[in-house]
Figure 1 (cartoon, rainbow, N blue to C red):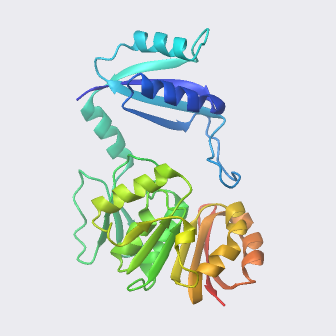
Figure 2: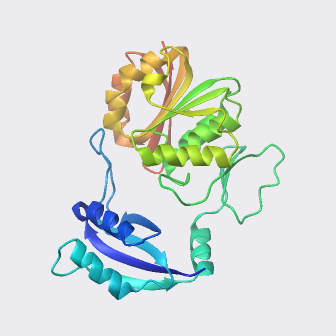
Figure 3: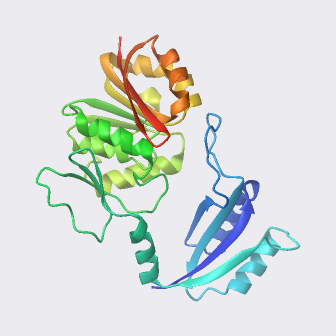
Amino acid sequence: MPWQEITFALQAEQTATFEEALMSLGAMSVTLRDAADQPLMEPAPETTPLWDQVLLTAMFEADADVSLIAGQLKAQLQLQTLPPYQAELLQDREWRRTWMEYFKPMQFGRRLWICPSGYERPEQEDAVIIDLDPGLAFGTGSHPTTALCMQWLDGNAIEGKTVVDFGCGSGILAIAAAKLGASRVFAVDNDPQALQATEENARVNKVADIITVCDPQAISPGSVDILIANILLEPLLLLREQFAQLLKPKGNIVLSGLLAEQRQALEAAYVKDFDMGACEQEEEWVRLSGVRH
């Protein structure tokens, strides 16, 4: 089935109103991507980071009238002129081929794999496979910080453990922990779309009975064996005390979302409650791990 794709060049502050308006005009989906290769380094807590310049792409059914949509959008938003945009009729096979070029099976450590549909599954006998297609938000495992956390899970004993994936995004780490034998996994995020994505991906991977999507307040203090937080420096600093309260004595903490130059600041804060161990680096990103006192 072909799709009509319309892409707008916007400023960050325009995205919310354009997204809402386009969905009301019949868009099947709306996606955002960086228009200027701008890194997102340090958003404030409780905020959703966004680039200054954004390409917003709305997908409509193939017979959608682009001129009519543009006119309705301009009227609805009360604009004299619309920001620059372009439209393209995208064949379904082209769309599938495009994302399959970028999302291929990925291996993490020795056993863990992420496999999109349409590819043969690895022949490795003890492979632990997460089924994941590009779709509802928040990551496909390709970012170095996610890879670093996946490698830690692959290399450590997870069987029978209680695990928290704090800042779960699409739920990749929670699903990996469940498939590696965790007895219970809590997935925490402050974005409702992330929680929705995690629930759906857990269902697809048949681990929904192990993963609980919840607020951190629902997790009993001192009940957690492993806590993984792949977020950013500022929230990691703010959450240190809460993490320490959740973990059992000798429980493991795994922290990522950090640049190499931020390592010392985080270690200095966490040594109060944790024996901090090895640091692993991939590109400019690092992963720290430690054990609760």
